[in-house]
Image (tube, rainbow, N blue to C red; front, side):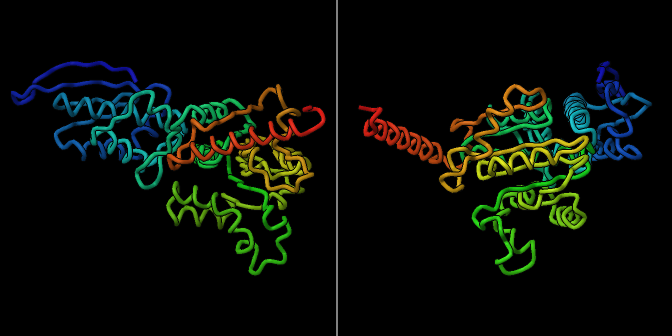
Length: 343
């Protein structure tokens, strides 16, 4: 926005007038239908006057309110330019952040992935999460590899929802290997959803944090959001979709190739996993381990590695991860000493 400030008096009271020129966005999307988003700002600041004229909006009122309204409009435009769409809940969230004294700085604003229905925001909190967001912007396929608690799945789901809201894709497909069920779910009681839900629960948890229950239910019913076991992906081709493979360390090499070749036109994928926590049989090679060598250096494919510094769960998780790393290193060293080559 181009800012043109001026000072004036009205009824003897000192007022500030600023003119903001909209650039890079459609004014209709920024102002809302019938200027409803501007009216929301006026309701927040009753003494403030906002006038929309073409690609320009005039702010007139007392200096502190004009400055806050200006910050709100600038943040609204940032959200619009980032996602391609601006919703009423986005405007409410921005107003709450600014008027609550927590107006995000430019750096903080850049870390916002998605504004949620309950007035919150999903933010890239760590260097690894920020690297994942940046990689997803610039690449069609991204592998996010790191230990438990680093927010790989949560961040990936937020990125996918942001793409859906911005109409960059038409649907989201979330999948993970159901290794614990042997990938053969027929012996379990209930229908398909009842059989697979326990193994896909982490994906539902992330979605429920970000979408209102009725909208999530509607998306699931209409297959705008689809959650399926990896075994059910065979034979499909996914166009205009954002696909997430979670717990990819439990995908075999054959399954990994099968998944990656499901992508169709205008589709993107994030593959998450922790190579230290595979549940595959001892003699089976993890597809997530192999793929790092097979696909290294291919343009459009990125590998992001998170570490214990990116852990966002309980403070003890970092200590647990470090303890296991020390244990495995010590065990490998001990086995090396006991082997003939170690003599």
